[in-house]
Each structure stands twice: as C-alpha cells, then as structure tokens.
Amino acid sequence: MKNTALTDIHIKSGAKMVPFAGYNMPVQYAGINAEHETVRKAVGVFDVSHMGEFILKGDGALDLIQRVSSNDASKLYDGKVQYSCLPNEDGGIVDDLLVYRIDEKTYMLVVNASNIDKDWDWISKFNTAGVDMKNISDRTSLLAVQGPKAAEALQSLTDIDLGTMEYYTFKTGKFAGIDNVIVSATGYTGAGGFELYFDNANAEYIWNEVFKAGEPFGIKPIGLGARDTLRLEMGFCLYGNDIDDTTSPLEAGLGWVTKFSKDFTNAKQLEQQKQAGVTNKLVGFEMIERGIPRHDYEITDADGNTIGRVTSGTQSPSLQKAIGMGYVPTAFAKEGTEIYIKIRDNKIKAVVKKPPFA
Image (cartoon, rainbow, N blue to C red):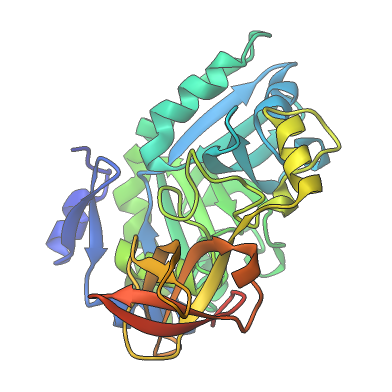
C-alpha cells in the first residue's frame, strides 16, 4: 500500500486510516458529519495526493487528447480546465478526468488514483505521433481546500487574486513562498474552493502554512468519508461506483462532455446511441421511507421486480435525508417517479430527484 507525502501528519492528527485505491488514506478525523458541515459552511482541507497526473507535451498533444477524450479540448485556452471522460471501444468509460491547458503544446491530465496505470496504458496506445508523456503522479501532491471561506483562508499565502478566479480556471505562481504551485478553482464538493498541485518535497510545509493561514476561518482536515457525502449531495459521479467500463457516458448523464463535433474513441457508436435514445439512465433519488441505500442494493418497481441497482447512497448530512444514485430504465427516470430500494428484504419507498440534492 502506498503512502502520500502527508500520511504521517494524518496519523499524528488522529485520522482513521483506510486502504483506498492502493493508498493509505484518511477516511475521517473528527467524524464525517462534522467534517461535511465544515466544508459546507467554512473551509476544509483534503489530501488527495493519490490522484494521478500526466503531462502531455508536443505538437501532437492536443490531437492525442482529442482522440482519446469525449469533450472538445480545442475549446481550452491557457489556464482553463475541462471535465471529460475517456471512452473505451465497447460503449463504456475507461475513466473520467480533468484536462488542464498549460500552453498550446502542454497539457496536464488529472485521473483517478485507481486508474493511473490503466489510463496511462490506454492513452499510450493512441500515442502514435510521439507526444512526450510524463507520469508525474508519484512526485506530485494535491490538496483540495474546499468551502465558502477557502479564498479568504488562502489569500494571504499568494499574490494570485483568488476571489476573482473563475470556476474551472487555474494559475501557476508562488504559494506560501513556493514557486510553480498550480492553484486551480476546481473541486469535488460543490462548496467552492481550490486545488493545489505541488512537489512532494513541499507537502508538509504547504500543509502547515495552509492551516496557519486558515486558522481564523475555522479550517479543519477532512477525510474521504466527507468527500463522498459532499460529492453525492451534488450528484457528482464516482468512478467504480456510478461510472465504469460498462456504463455509457450518455446513460450516466455525461452527454454534456460528449461532443460529436470531433472524432474520438467509439464516437460513431455513441452518436448512434444518442440518436436511438438510451434505455437506462443514471438518476438521483431521495428516500421517502426510512432506510439508507447502499452500493449494489436492488432497485425495484412497486411489484418488487428488480429494475436496477444503487450505485451510490448515503445519509445526507446537509439534508438529514437518505439519498442515492442508480441506473433505472428510462420509464422510471422521470423526476417524481416512485421507486423502491430493497433493504434487508424490505421494499423501502424512494422518489426520483434530479441532483444536486443540497
């Protein structure tokens, strides 16, 4: 199991550590509900250094990204970030990712920790033009500083004007006295904030400086447990749960990052699927009756017939309601449709609701 550059700090801080995507990661410190509320109302810090980062550089870098990703990366400009996915050749998704345009010939791809090797091999397979590819995952640390007070908490550490940065843009500059830190107005919580990319050698120093600067704003360390409840309240997909090698981006509601104005892996088949209409859809739902939906629980109709499975589910700390997502036939996908979640052989009533929930 791998450690991040901050693992010792998490252990010393009393974090409960769990294996996640091959890494020893903090799942919680003070408790998931408290950490969730910290991010929604103030500011919290996630160590997400397990994520993967690839640098693609050269004349053919954009062309390679265009061939392997579903979104249109030609729309990017220097300092712009784009959410996208890597379709496979069978109608499913290799991974979802972020594409950063550093300059006209240089891009950074940020991929899921569990898929680093898989994604590297997949993209390399299409690299027929000799694009320079570097996997910098093992030497790169990543902090997600999230919450409505994130800009105020971090501003004293940088000359970058955090308050005016647009969502899904980034700047590279000095942060806490360290050069070449990428400060990105992105995140996985829906609470606003920034993601900071820097060399492992500076991880402990930057972590400490962030907490010193953020102390007046109530900054706290946050684990992966609250990261999951926060992203689920927004309806953000988690690879391996809500999307995987068997799920179509169109079924998953990712049509908005699937652009048929260019050619990419499996584009023809996906376009045919779009024209024909999908038969299943990923939907959000709220529980009407008491019960917490969990991954892989059956979804049924009123007669008890299985119509799908829960992909993600939790008790929402913000709503004090149980929520979830899952794939159902399109006939059951309309908002307000009643469905049932099978919990310990009982049919528990839920209603389809379009995320975000909170």
